[in-house]
Length: 191
Image 1 (cartoon, rainbow, N blue to C red):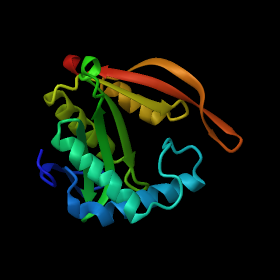
Image 2: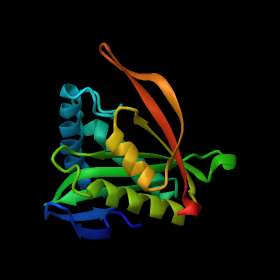
Image 3: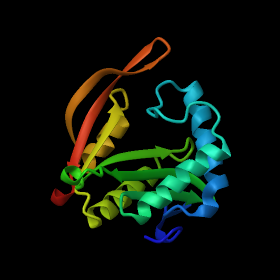
Image 4: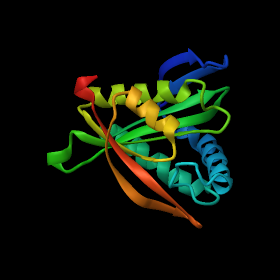
């Protein structure tokens, strides 16, 4: 998919027009706003299942992230889509391909939806599109981890064909809270 090219447009359950598209160089400032919004939420919501984005995200940090995504997407090692509403990035999902030859068919999935845009169908559509693009690129075995406390996400992942394969106890520690992570995978050939 070319940089910034629209993959799909749809109306969310709450009536907002959502565009799913690849990231482009001009998204840097929007990515900084998106990452900082999620980082602020993580600081007050210990249950938020995001292990990245600690503290304020700088333009330099996000430039490195964006450059890596664009470079790896061009090489076929990254599938990345943004969800955009009214010109603002409100979600991002990606699958990065494992690069050793014997696991080149596998990828690791990640998704972040900004507060205020959850539970309206954006995450499901974004995830479906990224998995579809991954399968087209030969990434047919996809792994993810999710907080065991996030029943809503686990349900969505199972709905989209992921199966639980284990739990890593106390994988994430935030202050005095310990979170188990559920390990899941999907074989995209069976979708």
